[in-house]
Length: 116
Image (tube, rainbow, N blue to C red):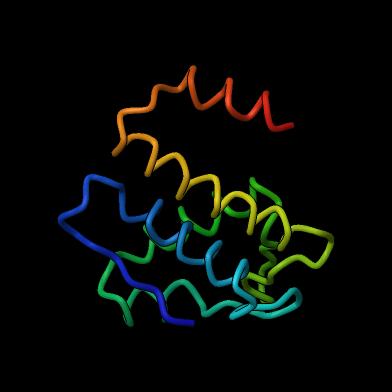
């Protein structure tokens, strides 16, 4: 799994990591049941603090994408979480593009309501 972070980005590092994992799950690069790298290993590989990785993994656990278990590490859940991760990844990209285009939250919400 290839994760990239941009230290100069205004987006917090843990958010960038979480988005990278979501994207990897959404594209099938990481499948349900796959074990993610240990926090210490991933932190070393990408040059961040281990607690940054743990915070990203914790966020993904709260979202229901990962199971975190002592001795087992971080495992991608297989109960539809991958589909939700794909939708979330698309929604994040849409929200970022909407901000770049000057579309307000209310306009974006109205658009979703119209399409749903």
